[in-house]
Amino acid sequence: MTTATNSIYMVTMSAPTNIAVIKYWGKADTHYNTPINSSLSVTLDQTELRAITTIAVSKQFTKDRFWLNGVEEDELLHSPRFRACIEGVQKLAQDHYDAQGNLIYSKEDWKHLHLHISSYNTFPTAAGLASSAAGYAALVAALCQLYHAVETFPGEFSTIARQGSGSACRSMYGGIVAWRQGTPKQEWRDSKAEPVLEDWPQLRALLLVVSDSKKDTSSTTGMQTSVQTSMLLQYRAQHIVPARLQAMEQACHARDFGTFAQLTMQDSNQFHATCLDTYPPIFYMNDISRQIVRIVTVYNSWAGELRAAYTFDAGPNAVIYCLEQHQQHLAALLCHYFPIPKGALSGLDTSSMALEESLLQACNETGRIPRMGDVQTMYATKPGPGPLVVTDVCNLDPETGLNCYVPSLK
Ligand code: DP6
Image 1 (cartoon, rainbow, N blue to C red):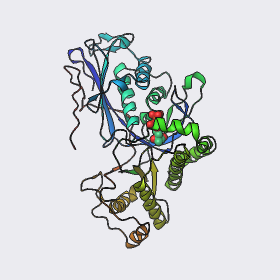
Image 2: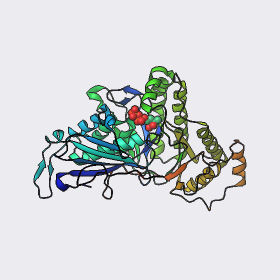
Image 3: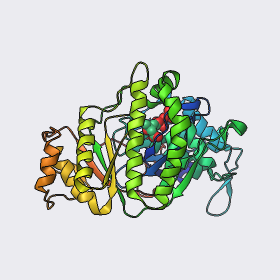
Image 4: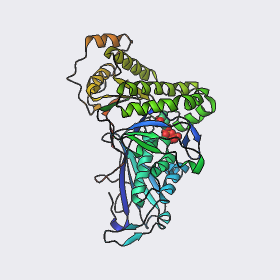
């Protein structure tokens, strides 16, 4: 939405989460926030999971202000990451004209004008559900829209989002997206996101929220310790990821789900192995996560093919990729072993799905006993587009420019 009521000019944009199948873990340069290896992810549909950011600019504003999920956040607003995003987009800003063609702000004006920013996530923040990816992508996308920014090379906006949070650069595009590691020359300008495959129409994902509490080791801190102490991480970045990424890209282009699934699970396992190899060790997966791995493994061997691929980020929550024709069956199986309260599975109905006796027997052998509450919510989702202009939501009051988003009580 673009409005200029009472000399307040504002825009609202939304941005998606993305879940990596080849993980980013470890920084080559902490100042530029660049990785020790390239990575690849799937951008998820925004229907359920997205960050929505409104930014307003006005001569009336006396200082920059930022609200996250309805709460004013001064520290984050003044953090180097946040400033890098604002200043990065300002450098690419253009003039702003009103509907009659009158110049309202010239591109030189922007850096003297204060901003009001209000952002919220439609899902738990900092719980390993890629909220910082969606959040920084929405921030950069909204700034680009506000300032009419123009890239000087393809992917430049993603290099700005990267400085907010590494994984955010991949949320700047839809579909399947790579983040190319880049090189130190020219201030890492080539460390950017690149769309690999616009669409894989049959690809689906189930997202199992095991815990929505804030993770105890942030990705930033965790990966710094891993870089300093894990030899396995160095080996992975240099000797495993380059070939694995190439194989993964080929699998995506060929829509070869079996290869995609195997590489996804192997890469998730290896990422968590590097966390264990970190000194002191970092534990992101928990007992429930491991039980999900066991059920998925049994499901695949029961089916005689790879139909489901789990992956875990910096938290215990699982994302399970599959194809459309198996999503309902897989969801029914997971709901059987990890029962969720009625209505906690959004986007899919599993009530009519009967599970085969042989499958249940095989899964029972893992020792998993169905228990309500181990998984809190399940989302059925699929790949989706990059940032979008929002016209029906606005987080700032158009008259005052103050936050008007109030979190709804669960
Ligand atoms: C495990 O992008 O959150 O999700 O750059 O420090 O903000 P910072 O880290 P962040 O790390 C994401 C790590 C991961 C893997 C991935 O998304 O590739």
